Length: 226
Ligand code: MG
Ligand code: ZN
Image (tube, rainbow, N blue to C red; front, side, top):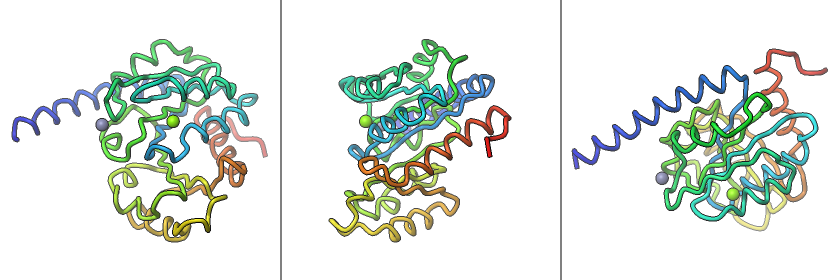
């Protein structure tokens, strides 16, 4: 048991070292980097599809799409207008780590990129322990899940800076309550920024897009247009 703990510690500290390298590399290039985490089926890929389609004229967006198997999500994202999409197939691993990301970053034309999304593997547990060098984690939940997700997976909500509640068009078809989900999340992390969206109806996405645009202009040190 002690040995097991020591190995985990070693893996994580090596991961942190690599993540710090990635972070400074991305900072030099002034790239906003968001690590998207959620359970399977919350809509990470759908949110990215919408975002790429809406913002591709204004911003140069790259996506690293992690999946345990298949490149299906990466193919969807390329169709949505993402010319810079790279899949990572973890071959069984239930999270991305900094080594996988750093390998893929070496292939990306970073000088052209404003905004980088890392779509993590659908899993609310161990991706919270693996720093990928991102600016922040964005956690998604959807109204087809339990509104107690934040209480069940507090580590993830504590380490995320932003929460997106997806599928608000389906509110009322289950016991999910928006106010309760928000309260549960804020109880875990009072500084979470919350977006409520539907990738299907488009509701709420304008605020998400505007926020992304502001992150990019802040990073580049230019003021956002009034
Ligand atoms: Mg996906
Ligand atoms: Zn894992």
